[in-house]
Length: 206
Image (cartoon, rainbow, N blue to C red):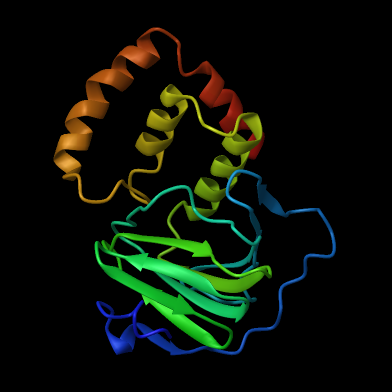
């Protein structure tokens, strides 16, 4: 890790990575592709008899790829095990950290974060999201929205925020204020039938 980048990050944030068998990306079936962020994702099936409420997924992130904006998972911990390439994380307001091959970082619930591939090679990482909640549906819906248009329609974005309220939120803005804004706007959207496009997108993910 670069000391300049980690001035505001605890040394305990980055740990030696765990061993994972490489995910298979040889076929297109089941691969979630988000053209807007440069992400390709494959959801790993649970092992037989496994009862942990956790979603494990493979992430391939193209050079220059990044999640569109900083965000918070209010009730989920996300752990990234980087196998190839380098991810740069922004954690909170000041935290910056590089996570390279063989290293892992765990982002606790409620911590604002953003990540990007800052290298010139594709990143491959295995990610654990706990508890799983509806994270798989969120990933599939975000990909479908990106396929429809690079920048989501404002109405679709509001409906997405509402549906996946338990999984992801905007950082730094109090949830009560966001909900106070969303509730009356979405009532009007649904009353006018302006949610038809979003419902059509969601039907394509099921």
